[in-house]
Image (cartoon, rainbow, N blue to C red):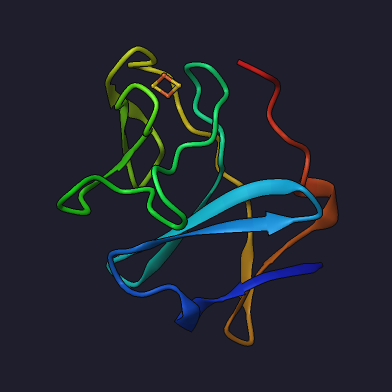
Length: 114
Ligand code: FES
């Protein structure tokens, strides 16, 4: 298992970029739940954030791609608005152990280029 980030290092209602061996992921904490995704927009495959650790829209309700503004649900990564409407961000399965977000190395297979 690979340890990515401490749960308490992600503030409620915010996001964090994670770089692990040049794999780029991000985590969002909402309603005390962690959501973990590949940092890759299903539109053009670009990273999503507009500034370091900034993956959410202005009111923190949705994940927003900084390139063309696509909006995604935090809970399941489904794109509601934008050029990739109907597609999904790809989740990364994880467990929480001792307050750390952990992933199986075998799960760190990046999604195909969109
Ligand atoms: S690259 Fe994300 S909306 Fe176009």
